[in-house]
Length: 512
Image (cartoon, rainbow, N blue to C red):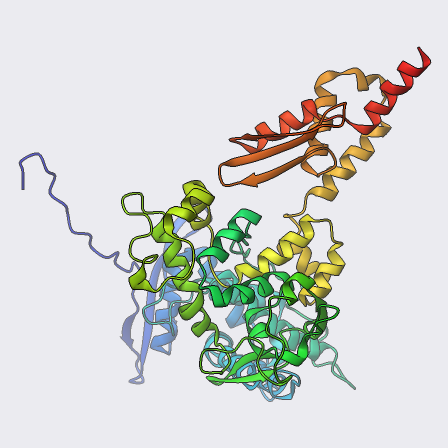
């Protein structure tokens, strides 16, 4: 090691600030004491909390380290204060009754609900009666879930926001059922109804551009390309696609009957209904896609079987079909040896060579594609996004995609389609004073908007950039490739002849 190289100091794990200590009682029993300092009336005060159970003391000490004494005390006192005389139905007992009587759910889902009760509800609420469940107790439980450190060896402390929403959603539904109980409600109202939950920042939903779609198809093994196109055009979930049979496809209309999907129940795969009630549906795909499918077979045969005739599993599809294509994309991105050994004769590759693919798509397209979240679900996201971008009403897309409601489609994909919003802004601009029409900058901005929503000229993405297509006053169509989308938009906005503008000029010349 050189004299100028700084010596690295080994990192020491952060020690726990608050540690429960055993304290003997006069009766011979042992309590676990957690000592801490809290500010009261502007002054620091040393105090402690005793616990009969060591695990309870460890949990609360960890919570104390995480959220501080004020919030930790609020949670503890919410639990201690929520006590009433015994003999009533407890919270845990009611939750178990509710989970057992639910119908229309998988056995695995029911078992998951019981795990929620055993690992998350009982450790916090103990044997509290149902009538003791208040809004304050529910808020304290949510905060406790955020920072709980037990029952998850090797994992970071606390539950993720999505997990908290799942667990709280089950309890909230059970408490709502308790409020609806007849002839007498078990609780006056649902104490979970207005609890503020941690915000869930969902993973981005990437989708393919037409050029990226062609590139992905080009690196897939040729026999799987019709399946890839069908997955995009049908917007089906992978588990729904793998369950389709030949008889589910109408070759004359392009109708696809989706009424089953592969699911896992207690570790075993089985056929069941789609994910949601609206998942059972009839959607349509282009006849061009249907023409690529092998439908001259027995109607009960799988539409897309594996090489041995069985149904794909999600993991099997990823390993056998999807991951090899991603590896070829990564090999194309290698500047020193583009394609590596994945496109040669030794790999038995039957498609275009690496040089041909790079000449067709360019390194920019490959690099841009590899920055996206490349999973099999990208096919579904792409199909939904394309339909929204093409102006298909969102309620039609929601129905064909099998979403539970239109709000699900809007929440997950509504940000993708800005065409309607831009068109609405253009139309409402007509209510502004006509004097502003003479302002050149506003007129140019208006024309740019029209280009972006496809009502003026055309801009198409290519491997080497973006192609601008426009028509001049004589009706001749021109095209030119630009490096950026904005440059192509500006060129079309400046050179395309607006039909309204041309008509006005022709009328003025005729009058003259």
